[in-house]
Each structure stands twice: as structure tokens, then as C-alpha cells.
Length: 317
Image (cartoon, rainbow, N blue to C red; front, side, top):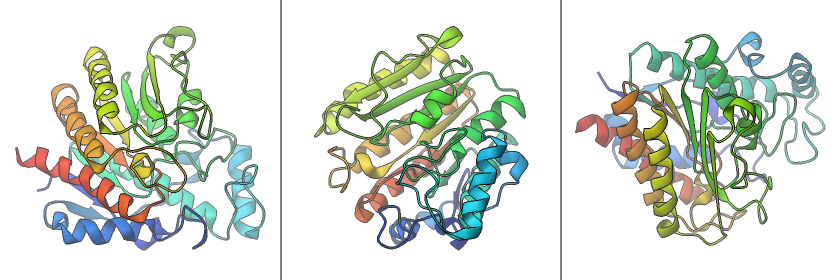
């Protein structure tokens, strides 16, 4: 029995906005080829995608917004936000499959069937409860967090994000919830969409002081990552999470066409390995990693494969 599961399948790859869009349908294939070349498919279990029900999606999203996505999905016309996230025929089913796959992984982890899971097309962290944003239609991270809080009655769920873009859809949806730990290294919002995630944004109400936003300057490399990553590990050790989500966006790796970061895949490896150890210490190994952003196909291949390799190495130790 393997401790790590990787979710792959054509239905998951369908979440993309055309060959000429940065978030194209070839992203999963870029990862899968490299992952198989490294032989990691022999060291993990593989499972197929699952589609979420509307009821599951509406744990996070409003009924009215879900209805708007269904309408856009039927027509295949227009945008689901102000101009970044186009509708296409079948976008509802594609986005619901991202959510359903994340929920399938979450339930398998919570049942103790596996310790870790990786989903390459997931981590759609910009979508708000009532709107699409930044290539993200449904926020699978948000649905998973709501499920862990309400279906499984957890009270310390950690969300860690190393995507170059701030995870605003997650942050603002749980900004005042002390049950949700939030730690996010991202390119400074003065220079990059969505322009949020300042150091002073530490939560509101009962959660004030409990969230950790770590903006870094453009062109920051692994040396900067190392310094900030130590803060994240200290934060997690202090709060002792019961479940960890990692949004492992590859757009923070040097050479991405729409960001200005200079991390290497070693940052992704360090993050995944560190979170595996923390998960083993506090939450029975429970770690769900999601691919997130990334628009340089080589970076997707190396960054995401590094995450899976770190999980497998931890399993073998």
C-alpha cells in the first residue's frame, strides 16, 4: 500500500482555457511526462478524477454564482470575471471535477487510507465565494477547508501557499476564522496581481494576528525563500495543525512568463518535505498538495515533480 496518491486523467486536464491562454489544457501533460520519466509513478498510487456535486460546491460558493457558471458553461460565451477567466462549453463540469477530485483526496486522507495526495490541476485560490477571478472558477481550496471544518469537525486547518500570486480567494474568505491557519509567500502585490497580501494583513476579529502574509520583492531567489520558509515552519509548529493544504504554484520558479520570481524547484521540494515532517508530527501525515499556477511548462514539470518526489521520499524514510 502506498502512502501517496497522484490524481491524473483527461477529465482533470480539461480545466484550461484554450491553447493560446496561459492556463492551457496541456499543463497536466507537462507534469505527467516528467513525473513518469523519473519513475515516480511506480512509487505512488494513481487515481482518477471525480466530479463534485452542486451541493458540495455550494459549501463555499453562493448559489447565484454557481448558477452563473452553469449558464456560461451552457453558452460557452463571455467571461466569468472582468476579463481573465473566459467561459467555455463544459467549464462547469471541468471546474466541478477539480473540486470533486480535491474532495476525494481529502476524504481518503481523513479516512486514513493514505497520508499524502497531489493533484496537478487544482489549487484555484483566486475564486471568491461569489465570483471567478484570475483563471479560477471554483475555489477547490475553499471547498476543502469548509469540508474539513464542517464535515470532519477540525478546528486547525493550515493552508500554505507558495504560488507567486497571493491566495486572496482563500485569505479573504477565512480572514476572520481562527480555525484556518494561513501562510503565504508571494511576489509583492505592488508589482503583481492581485495586489493583496501585505505583511499587515494578519486576520480580523477573533483571527487577528493569526494569518501570515509574506510578500517578497521581484527577482527573489531561493536564498530569500529559505529565510521566509523558516517563518512558516515556526508558525505551523506554534499552531499545530490537524490537516495541511499546500498550494504549490510553479509560477514562483524562475522563467515564468507572467511573474518575476526566481525560485528554483528546490524551493518546492523543501516546502513539501518540510510540510510532510510537520504533518507527521501533528496531524497523522495529512497533507494535500495542489499544483496551482505556473505557465512555463518546464517549470511545471520540475516544480510539481519535486513536490511528489519529496512526498515519496518521506514515505520511504
